[in-house]
Structures are given as C-alpha cells and as structure tokens.
Length: 77
Image (tube, rainbow, N blue to C red):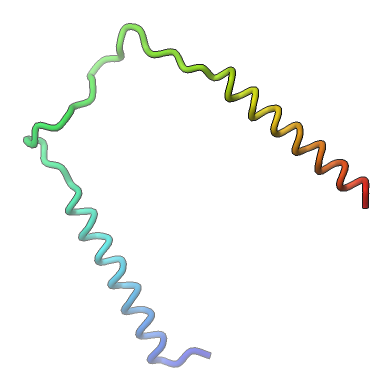
C-alpha cells in the first residue's frame, strides 16, 4: 500500500512532466512571418502515382503465410 508521501511525490512528478511537455509544445509554435514553406492552395495537375501493388501483394502474401502457420500449429495440438 502506498503512503501519502509516495502518492504526493508521484503526483508532483506527473504534474511536472506534463508542465514540461506543455512548455515544449509552446516552444515549437511557428509564427506566420517566419518565412517558412507554405502548403499549396490547389492540388497539382498531375499528382505523383503511388505504387501500391508491390507492397500490398507482399503484405497479403505475408498474412496468408502467417494464417497458414497458425492453422497448422492449432491442428498439431
């Protein structure tokens, strides 16, 4: 069972952790006049094609192989 001192110490450390996280988040805020890159307002006329076929087929084959392995292990019991 935790004592009151232990609970107080944990609460204080947790509050300090969240306070430091809030300070770090404020430090990352960018101001509009910094001159950083701005996102495009319209979509490009020819978006870059993404090859989904190669990765998707590998994931599907891996899923089938894993499923077969699990079925064989279940039947071996």
